[in-house]
Amino acid sequence: MNSVEDKTKRMAKLMDANMKRVHFNNELGLEIESFDESGKYPLGSYIYKRKDKHINNYNAIHGGIVASVFDVAMGIGCAALTNHMVTTADMSFSFLRPAMGDLFRITVEYGHVGKNLVNCTAKMYAVEEDKETLCATALGNYFVLEMPLMIEE
Image 1 (cartoon, rainbow, N blue to C red):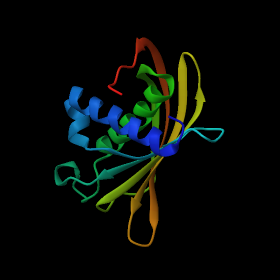
Image 2: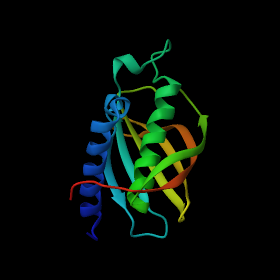
Image 3: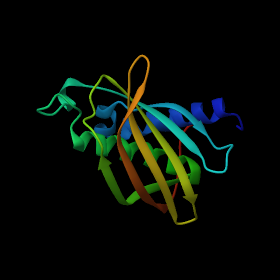
Image 4: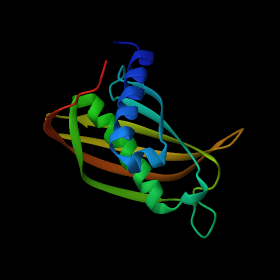
């Protein structure tokens, strides 16, 4: 499995398996758009679609949902890259503007992929017909656990 398309298909299987095991992740409905390990730093792209029950008083996506979407997007890629289960070591967020709209793209760059720790940065964009607007950014570190990742190939 060397092509971006093959990696993306494997990530989709991993995402599906994760959603079956973790009900909250299923509730988020995050989708894999693409996963590319061909460059110096692996890149992932994910899609989140607004759910009315995820909005706050200002008709924007609630900050807790944004944080959860970042955590799942970063974590699922870390698991795929290390072929091990991972857990969040720490995360920080910058909410730049309200996450308004119906469709959002989350991009993740996996900067350091080590034996024990993976570091990544993420951005969330509101996607409109003719533009994408940056809404939030995140930094995350994930511990690599001594539990191999098992998904059906």
